[in-house]
Amino acid sequence: GYTQESTKFLMIPMAQTGQEAVGSMGTDTPISALSDRPKLLHTYFKQNFAQVTNPPIDPIREELVMSLVTFIGPRPNLLDLEGTSKQKRLEAAHPILTNENLERIRAIGEVADNQFLTATLDMTYRVEDGADGMEDALQALCEEAVAAACDVILVNCYPFWEGYPIEHANIYMREMYRRAQRVADGKKVIIAETGWPNIGTPDRGAVPSRANAMKYFIDAVRWCEDEGIELFYFAGFDEAWKIASEGDVGAYWGLWDKDGAPKYF
Image 1 (cartoon, helix red, strand yellow):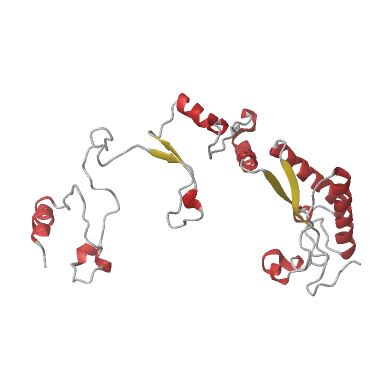
Image 2 (cartoon, one colour; image 1 turned 135 degrees about the vertical axis):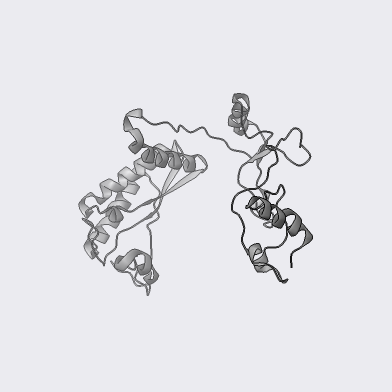
């Protein structure tokens, strides 16, 4: 059952040296587990490290088969003709960017009639914060990156999930909104989701009740009207399916019950 190749390049070297011979190009035959032909036992086992002995890949001397060209941007789905396949990517001749190339990328958003938007974000943080400060710095960097890529910022404000009592809930929501404004850097900020459940298990100092839900709604609406803030009150109707992910409070965030009847007026 041994082929001439196996005998010459595998069996004889193994008998002579006591170890499997090192090949230069590997094998392109189908793996034995998927083959419809009988295979020897040893062919079912593969080494997990590279056996190639070629010199390092050389894009200059082997330019016909190797390139250092790098694309910057999301990889498109070639089968999605209406979606990501139309997204443009930057092509760089080398994966290592010089200061000059980096400056070109930074300024490309200022070029008229192009499809790229660029933003420069500060990824430094105070050395006094040490390693513990990296997590907060990365979180702030992600927030700034999202804000830089958007024209309008939609924020979700849920003091209930932070365990704040109803007396401090509106203060906390204001602080969440101010924080989003600082990150938005002048862009429009809309409160897209907020609310307070009227039934369920308390979360630390946050207690679900009919009175608390109504107070939260009134305080939120009044504050947004006074400040000229756009607000979309979350969960117009109770939704029972949310119990699976939000616990027993999940089905009671709405201003109307699951049958469409108003709960508070």
